[in-house]
Image 1 (cartoon, rainbow, N blue to C red):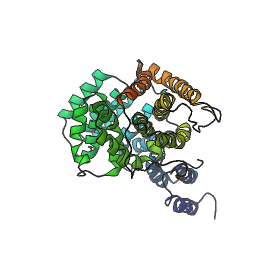
Image 2 (tube, rainbow, N blue to C red):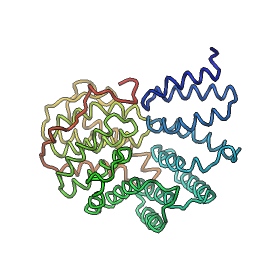
Image 3 (cartoon, one colour):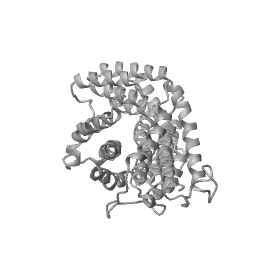
Image 4 (cartoon, one colour):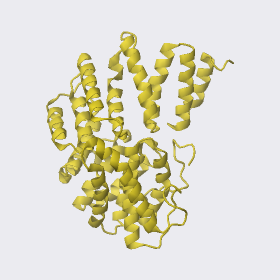
Length: 383
C-alpha cells in the first residue's frame, strides 16, 4: 500500500475512530488530511478537516482546531455551492470563543471576527440570538461588564431558530452569566431543571456544575456544593478539554478542607494543564492549585505534594509550592490583562484566595469519585 493513497487514509481512520478524543487521534487525522492534500482530494480533505475540528476541540488542541476551520472556511468561500458556509456557522462561534485562550489575539481581531460571523449568519438567514450570547460570554470573560450587559439584552430580545444553541446550552450559559454578575440566588434558581434531573445532557451539564460552585460557596449552600463535586467532577475528570474546570473543583475541596481529595486533583491535573496549549485554561487550573496550597499552608503545613519540576523541585515545602503557583499564575495573568485592558486575571487569583474565607470543613459524600494518579487521563499520551 502506498503511503499516499486513499487506502492509507482509510487505514488511518479505521485506527483513529475507535480512540477517544486525544492527541493521538488528532495526529491520525492530521496525517490523513496531509495525504488528502497531497492527492489533491479536496472533498476528502474538507470532510476530514470538518471531523478534525470537533476532535481537536475535545482533545484541547485549539490551535489545530482553528487551523482546520480556517481552511474549511476558505474552501467554502472559494466554492460556496459545494461547501455551504451555513454548515460552518456553529463551529465559527466555537472557534471565536476558543480564541480567548490566546492572549496574542487582540481586541481588534475579535471585532473583525464578530463582523465576519454576523455577516455570514445574516446571509444564512439566521437570527442573531447565539451571536449575541457568544459576544456576551466573551465580554464577561474579558471583564467588560457594560458590553456584556448590552449583549445580554440583545440576546434576550432575539428569538430562537434553527441556528440557536440548545435550550440546555443557553440555560447553562445563563447560569454562568448570573454567577459572573454575582446574582447567585438567581443562578441557583434557574438551575432547577438540571438539579431536578429534567435536563440531563451530560455533554452540556459537565460545564454547568462547575459554574454553580462559586454561587454555592457565596450563598453557603453546602448541599449544592457537594452535589457539584459528586455529580459534576466525574463528568470532566478524564476530559482534556475540561481541564480548566478542575481549578474550581480544587477550590471547592480547599474551602471544605477535603485536602486528601484536593491533593489528588492537583497531582492529577496540573501536569495536563502544563501540556495544554490554552493559556487561559492553565491559568484557571493554577488559580485552583494556588488556593489549595494556600489552604494547606494554613491548616496542614507539613504536607508534601507532588508537582512537576517546572513548578517546584521534588520534596519542596508546601509554602514553596504555593509561592510558585502564585508566581506562575501571575505570569499567565499579565498578557491577558494587557490584552483586555484591565486587571481581571490578577483579580481572579485574588478572588480564589478570598473565597477560602467563606468555607468551612464539610466531608465529601461517601460515593464521591476522587480520581488520582491511578486514573487513565483520556486524551493524554504521556501522563
